[in-house]
Image (cartoon, rainbow, N blue to C red; front, side, top):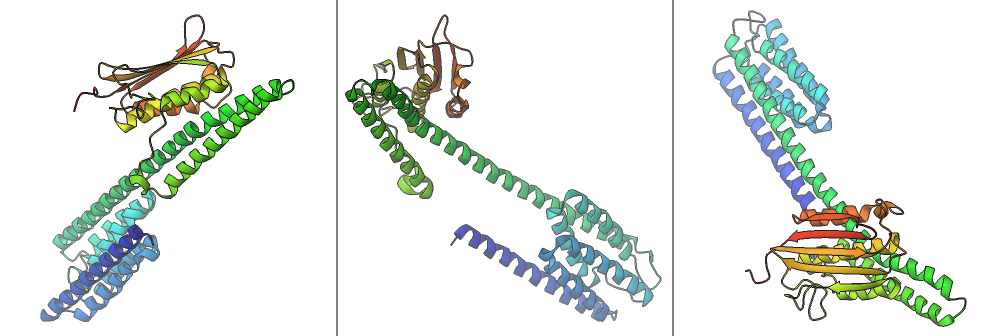
Length: 396
């Protein structure tokens, strides 16, 4: 059972019960007061019951309910004139029902329909409030002004509730967009890297397997390992999506960057890895977990930047012979620089791909207040540089 939906239904039902009780009290009280003044209380009672009943049934069709309520209110004014009856100013509680119908219509109907009902309601209420034994406009200007003011207040309440509903939808839509973007980034980062490795190794196996079976066996073993890691990563991600409460909703931290670099170098160009000297167990260091002394989101982002940069090298720079990965921590910033000596085409990062990797990388870094730059180096080569603000390791 969806507890949130259940609570929402209970709250909505409670509000309807409270509104019904308020309308019943208004109808009964006005009928009593009209009777004590020897006026036409049966007329007021019937009008109040019919209009308030229409208001309680408004959820079936708010446009028709509001239209019916205004027609009933206008008919009551005309009936009062025809029968020489002097109705009370609230028409036996019917005015309360009309105000509820107006607020509900403005809250939910399309702008044009809501505007028509708002204008029509002003005219109907202002005119009907003047009805009396002497006919319409029977010197009851004060009642007409009071009724029009109450109608305007009801419309203002409806507009305010409409605005709150709009903000609520905007918040939900923004949360859903953020979830979709986060899922897209995770799927790209987790799957693209491993699949790229599989493709590169399969291509290498095509050229080496015909003459010597040993390289082919090694390539197939690497492909099998990469495929298993891909499946494990996907299962982990799907598990987190199916059970968001697992591990307090936090995904396990990334592996050491050194392991990422080693796996890349097995089927790609040689990689030189330089890590912060101040963090011997630093990001990807063999002595500790990724990003020791850094917030988890910073360590994860550093890993993803390096992973995406290496994936781009494998996809778009097949002629690269060496890659350098430098991670530094200085002046309150973690800086990541990944360079290679491949062809430095200006459109290299989108030449054969969608470009989503660089977009996701930039979104991750900018979400933490950092910056990303990617572009060709002078002469030849390509560089990806990212900088993330973070407190120094020795700061509390």
